Length: 566
Image 1 (cartoon, rainbow, N blue to C red):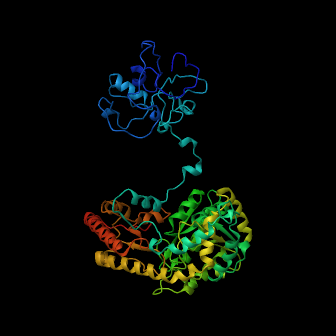
Image 2 (cartoon, rainbow, N blue to C red):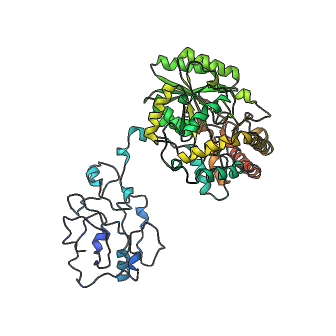
Image 3 (tube, rainbow, N blue to C red):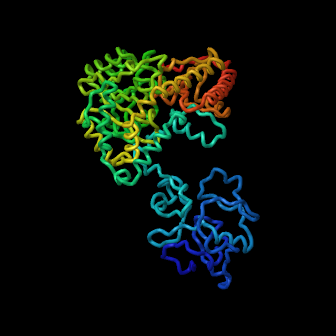
């Protein structure tokens, strides 16, 4: 490749076998102008040192350090990638040959006008004076140098305010820390999956007789499943017809669609303190103003709910809806009583507010603490169409089948359907078909008693371990169902700080602050008992207790401060 003849042309990364060496200055000055090679003998071609032609290609994989490789000086640590250069240049033809056989990030791709010249190192900040800014940044960088560009100026306001899920973040640690015991994600117990039934249904569904199994499907959902959902809702006391339901790709999409349909930027969404982090994420990503309502021992505090509603209305703010999880609330495990549910409906009618009821755990009540009658949804007594009801098959079948649903008045479902068309067109046909067949064959109802007993036993294992390891240094409301235990440590323990000690002990949880929308720190933690075995629960609580004792010893001289806001 002759650089003297390349001016005004687009650079092409092709076979370097016949290319002459790049002069020292080209490497030394990095993003500055690439010089020509008139000083080099024409006959001196660089041979790729035995690298076969089939292996000469760009690669992003690191290799072992070799003798003569350049290094980065200590004074360059922390500086922009565009400013880092070789501490010294490798010498000799073998080093040059190695360069020719690998990617050379110092060579910039030409701009549309064919210019090779980069007169200044490109700034990491878009539009910085004297740094080339946006006009230089676009389309200029070679592969592997995208870290030099600051994209913040390109993101929308909504993207700038997006919030990462604390649960997903903690759950991801499991793949990076050996022997980590995770009480963070609310996963169902894998040992309770109906593997044989799933396998039989999948073989039947995938026998090739119906191509629709692997095709796009209706946005509203697989029709037999849509028609079955009113029957499932009927077992929970909810009256519905197929026009009142829509299938969603998991409950998280149900939350996202609800946010798209009801939330304007700045609109108020009322949530419990604490509340589910997935809902916080979905609503904040829709630019809602989340306003917390206190809980008492039986769930949402109705007096505080009314006080907060009147305050927000007096300030001229629009209330989109109230979000509640009445059955075994995530994260506290609280069960709202039937009388309070009735009063919630009365409050909604009096204050003209919609209720979004999230009910993923209602079928998983513990026989020693609650009955099916006590889990009757708020939606079951809704006569005015004020309740939007969300539920899922993730906890009773398997979350790998991304199938959930929303039940609401038909006028709302029509809007949800339009929003879903833009989101993903339709939920996976194969997932819906398998879930429908599993339900149709009675597998779900037959397995529910075993699921309840299994999770009840795991709850007992965790409670006994906490009492044994920490005694009165931890308290919690007794879970009557669901997947979680809401542990409260002495108030001087900040569970965000404690988390570092816990991870060092190879155990992880979700800190309580993740569930509050008012910015408070917390001495509480959500512990999921659903996925781990009894032995792992015992060992995990032993590790957590060691971290708690160490933190208490450090904070013993620090005055206790309540985590409750003034």
